[in-house]
Amino acid sequence: MATKTTPKAEETGLKILESAMALFRQEGFDSATMRDIAEAAGVATGAAYYYYPSKDAIVMDFYQRSSEEMQPKIEMALEHARGLEARLCELIQVKFDHFALNRGLLRVLLRNGADPKHPLSPFSPQTAEIRKIDIAWFRRILVDSSVRIPRDLAPHLPDVLWFFQMGLILFWVIDGSPQQARTRTLLEIATKIVVNLIRLSGLPLMRPLRRSVVRSIEIAKGD
Image (cartoon, rainbow, N blue to C red):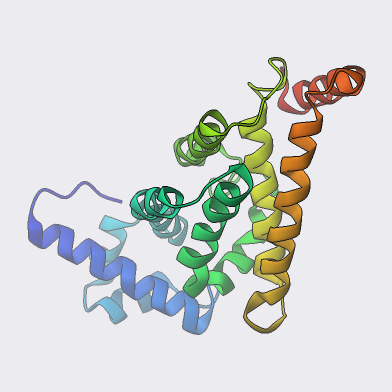
């Protein structure tokens, strides 16, 4: 988004963003044009392009703002959650709640999600800062937990949990059950399994398997 220097400019940019998101929900991301967005926001088409050179730029700003808005929500959700399992559930549930209104849009954007070269992919260089902030929360709940985490696994585990979250989000956006009830059930079961696996990973008899897991993670990350 173009740099804004005045409150009025900030207000105009926000109006364009909100109008665009409403159109994306109503008409679909592909159908809405920059001209449509400008008309809905009550600005000239050229002004819309000044603030956002493309629809992708609008979505990127939406991602960045969402990341900022979720920080206090996550803090509040974790404040009363006890134990790694509960805190992991709460951390991921915040994402479901925050993006609920735009779940349909996220489903459309998934087609580019697996391509790390696409700027809107959660794996792209353009979303690296958002990803870094999110992974830091997984690192925090691991550090704050009473679960003993093996030294060789510890550096990789926040990234693994972030990928775990992305898998759940993928399921959530395509979940056709009423109010995504299957996702809620899956979240509860899957987090229990993951936390139990983390606990088991510290057992001496798990050391050979853990080494193979760590090596697989390193290969996947390109380390």
